Every structure is written in C-alpha cells, then in structure tokens.
Length: 97
Image 1 (cartoon, rainbow, N blue to C red):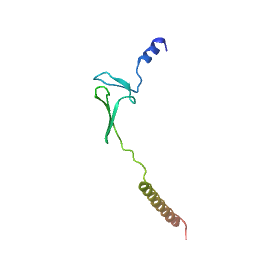
Image 2 (cartoon, rainbow, N blue to C red):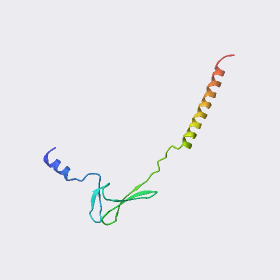
Image 3 (cartoon, helix red, strand yellow):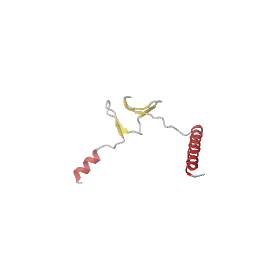
Image 4 (spheres, helix red, strand yellow):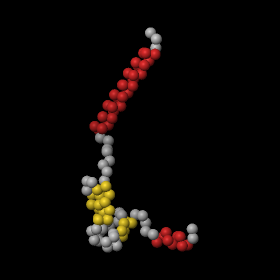
C-alpha cells in the first residue's frame, strides 16, 4: 500500500453513512435521520428536507410462546411413542417364539 492508496481510502466515507440525494445532507445511519417504524417497513427520512432515503422491510420473527413450546413437546412425545411402537413390533417379528 502506498501513500496514494491510503489517502484514497481515508477520503471515502464510512459504510454506515447515509446521503440525501435532494439536499446533500450526510451523516451516520444512527445519527440524526428521522426513523419512521411501521408494521411492514422502517423508513429513513432526511432531517433537513424530509426526503425518504431508505425503506427497510420488517420481517416478523417468530417467538417461542408457552403454547408453541407445549405444541412442540406434544409433537415430540407423539413421535417418540410412534417410533417406540414400530421398534417393539419389529423386535417381536424378529424374535422366534
């Protein structure tokens, strides 16, 4: 790396910087941008002129609830019982009487 390369890399803004194409405002994404959270998306608005800069979709993250844990446990138990009965029947067929 020579002096020219290091100078070019220091001139480049950080990846976390947002730019407003209308008014030229720039700052980190977590600095002064107005953030509007909606059910489907998060919108980033310019604090100077109000231009919408970015729209990020929001994805539902399923959380484990008591009901889903209970359902998972019941499904697990039913599968264990099923495999246990299959195994017992296969053993009975293989063992001569």
